[in-house]
Amino acid sequence: MVRVRRVFAVALAVVVGATLLTACASDPAPSDVAVAWAPNGRAAVLVTWKDAGQPNRITIEGVLSESPSYVKYIPAGDPNRWEIPTSAFPPDGNYKVAVATGTSQGGVTSKLTKSPVFDTDGPVRPSAAAVAPQGRGVLIRWSVPVAPQDFTPNDPLDIKGKKTQRYVPMIGRPGQMLKVIGPATTSNRQVIKSIKPPYVFQLRTGNEWSTQIGGQVLGLTSSISGAVPPLAQFSVPIRVRGRVILRTAGCELESPCTSQRATPAGVPVVVLTQVTPGARWTPAARGTTTGGGYYDIAVPTGGSRPYKITVPVYSKAGMITGTSTSRPAYTKSVVRVASAGFAGGDTAKKAGSMVTISATVKPAMNTTVMLQAWNRQTRTWANLKAMAMRQGQTALAFKAGQPGDFVYRFVIPGAMMFGRPMQGITTAGLQLHVR
Image 1 (tube, rainbow, N blue to C red):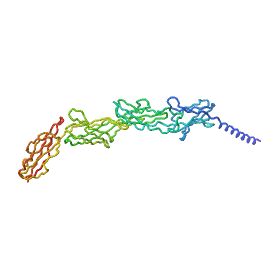
Image 2: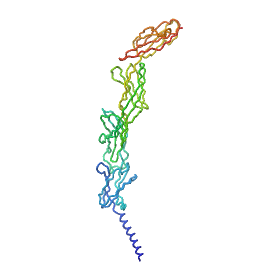
Image 3: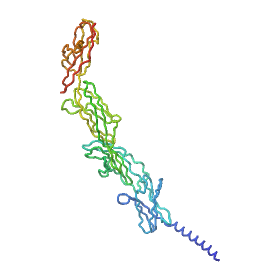
Image 4: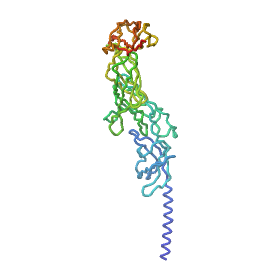
């Protein structure tokens, strides 16, 4: 009899337990689950729902995205609202918030009720920035790629309006942290007054979900070295060579910016000159650096004059370079012998025949030159005749004397040109054989 009672008691317990389980599993589900931005700067998503004062469990479900491991239990009697921090939502995905009746000990005891789908897409980072000088500062413009397709248009957490992301301008200098220099803006341009390189300009781009860094502009300083030949034949180009070194700042968000050095190709270089003493400096030649920051520029020459090499202020996508100038170096011009020799190029003549010796120089100047002959006995040059030079040309016809080998040369004196002295020159020896 006792055994029968025990069996009956166990069966009754099973039936009662099954009845209780069925009752718990069929608890009424919450209703009207909604999401909205919590107050105070959209740091959290506010979830609200309706129920009959039951305990609740809150989770996040991915829609074609992996569900994050977020669970929150709300005791019975607490307000039907909870703020989920935005950090709990993975970026760039689609999600729902699910609310059910349940506790951490008893588990879920109702069906899930879910909020509308919403996305957590972050801002579109600016892809390129252009910079141009403006007064003592710069004008920076940036462009932003087209945003990817929104698969949850007009979801409860979308910010209304066409311009839904804002840009916070920041500047970093070597040894300093990146710092904000202006309020957030929806514009795609920023004027920075009275700024000098080296610096890094960056945009902290944000929307309702996250921020990204983009739209970088480098403000660089430049230094230039150069070598200018001390002498140059009139109208023969000289080679001006040197190197350009650029410096800027490299910045990370959580550490001081550092100084960085660069020697890129393509940096413009201008050679300046003063045509006359006291005149303004004007461009004489232009070029660009090659790999390693080196340059080699052919510079046309005229009279004696100083030269200096400069890196002008220039900008291109994502960078602007400050100017720098080398010290002036003086190049003295030397009269150039364009031609010198005997008429017809014949250096062998019969005794008693006529010989014409001539010289042409640049610039086409008017002066007096000296014709000299080599004296074999004294081993010196002896003056033969002072000759007039007109428009850079001189010539002398004479009769070849006794047979022998003779050497002649012209001595062209210096001159003044554009208010500066020009160095004279002596031709090479001109050999004549008389038979």
